[in-house]
Length: 517
Image (tube, rainbow, N blue to C red; front, side):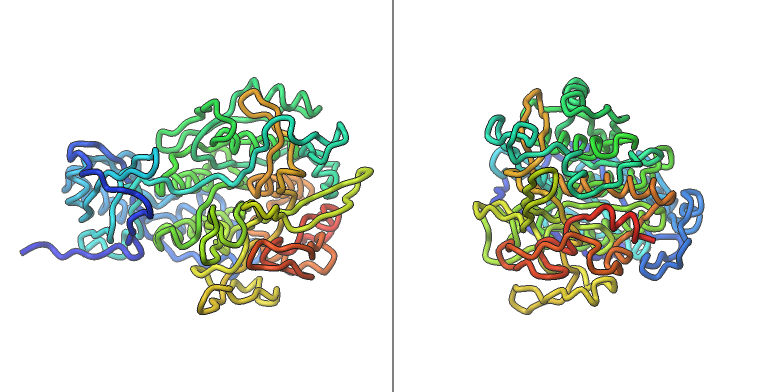
């Protein structure tokens, strides 16, 4: 009689729209998966945590990491199915396994096929993952069987010469100029902080960074790369590809908080890689990031339930360790697709209630002060993301923010996106250098590292980690942000107070450094 098996909750995958199945995956091909295991003890939302209840890395691992007995059960399961253990981590609650496609098929009850989507070929599956019934409740997620591209970067690069920088009378800015316009504190530089930047392709060249920081008159910050799941710093030479994202993130964060250590975590652009990079950064007890910047994402409902839950769970870990997670809200308006579809979508992971979701504005300045700031929407497909989640409920900190119902049929009540905003329009964007080319870039990809750098400055100024900062930001008095009241992102309109285009508004550094307690 066959052994009883159970479905892994939320693991169902649908065929990727437009992808064509071209045949089975060779049974002898070797693949690696990550198995997520339950916590030893439940961890409440940081909304329910008492002030001063942050945990050290060791305390977290002992109280809320995986039980060694559970890890052992997963390892025994792997041995029985001819799979090898690459790594086990109590803090990350994970067991990484490697084995053949044939062995994975039996172990997890899946059929893997090769698919083609445009020029991209990937390994895919449909339906649910199953596991032995005795592991139900112990295993919370299995990632990596399917290696379709998981996320896309949220940047918009303009070719060299199309926009002149502010220093020559044009509308573009260096990152320090944007920080000055927003009143970021000047007596701190992020010293003692570590900014983690997650990347899923591309890379940087040190020579480009040296030339860039010299050009804008800023000192070169400490920058290092960390490999996750075999990915590495691998610049492609294409400034319009992932290199454009990597360089924008490093240059914005590093120029504004040059005293902070910048650590770039490179991981594969897969479900497993996306989650693996986040867990690696959150539980990096050597570098100990105090803020994480993520400029990649995808429409919320295109992600499996197990992926959304696992990502949000890692953000709860981050909150309890005093880490702020800043995430770009998307660059294609309320639809979050290019071209726009027939429904509104928020971008994930910006829709996670435990991240600081960062939307975008169009920013103009005159005489060193802001003369105009509106919602970023150039009406050519490029606009700030934002809207109402259909996967995560309305968090307590947004109960009085006036988050509307979703514009989609059914009018879901959910987490509102974004929380905050900043300059994102490439037409008023950031001077960058990518693959030897000086240009101007924008997108909400610039806003996530902008806010990450600001958090690093505020951490230093306050002498402590702000950590999960959302409840504190929403509790601030009126006037703590630059309220953006003009413009729309398609389905949602800016208004006084919070809105689904620019959140609470763009930063007013002077108010934030004084009011955040």
